[in-house]
Length: 77
Image 1: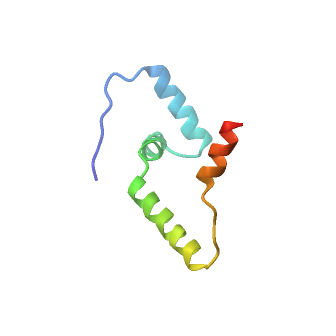
Image 2: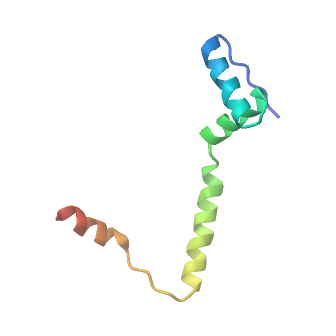
């Protein structure tokens, strides 16, 4: 697993991170790790989940309208 070193971080920022970590019941390292993970989501995995969901909808036999036309009509009003 990779490590990241952040140099010259303002002490006020570090204090805010420590406070946030304490509020969430985590260590500073764990809090920073969580923030970074949330800031860089795994889009490939998200698209795969979306595609699986779309496939399940199609297999259900239900028909769904294309919302693009409805949105366009609403914008044109």
